Length: 324
Image (cartoon, rainbow, N blue to C red; front, side, top):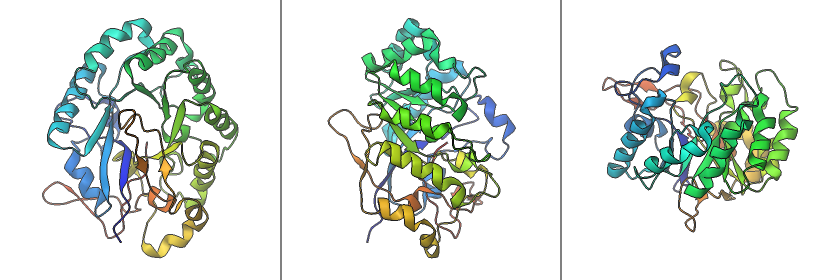
């Protein structure tokens, strides 16, 4: 039987010879050019139909060039299904000029991600300009990708509430403190967010919020299951956050390990995890993302470099359904 098709909702690729990407300077393993052929080598024989490109925090003056570069890639490789670039949403009304330029680059630009996770003020997203910038996205038919951590989640719930016409996509289940074993108030705030009608959630990024070297399925299971429970299986997407996922060891998906996932697997096997996916396709062309929880976690073996410089598969199955 052919593997079920997967659309990866969260992938990063970059060319360090072309763009300055400051955050990579502290991560030598990732501070190199990583491109689309590396990604598809890492996914191996998984039936990956395509992916959504998420901005990679290039230095802000290069943001439009980043979008242009990926747009050029989509013209020669149809597996890049959508582009989510950066924009300075905190500029409020002034963001219109930036967005007007941005949308001319490619029809595959479907959303914006302005990361707030590194902002020292947990309420950064509630400044008037940022709220207005998010509201304006709806006028351009663009979604807003929320990339915050658990300390900022409450403020982001209020942001979503104040932008009822904008569609939001929560990244990485709001980066809960899995490493510290905290469940509340993250869990209650996720429930409040899920109750709003204009937001979906990516099941992604869980393992990088756990202990990178020693995480287990039991560490991440309560957080993933809670996100599935409060959002429901029609308002979640799976994303890999590749190659950020390769920063630490991740769980093996050997076929003899399927029993580790039986509880969640029974909930998702054979069911469509259907998302509105406005970040992927135009309205009226929604699709299904089908994937069981066991396929949502990547291989424990990190990809290895071949002599040709491309990523090669390890002996373990490599899954892509994770984001960060």
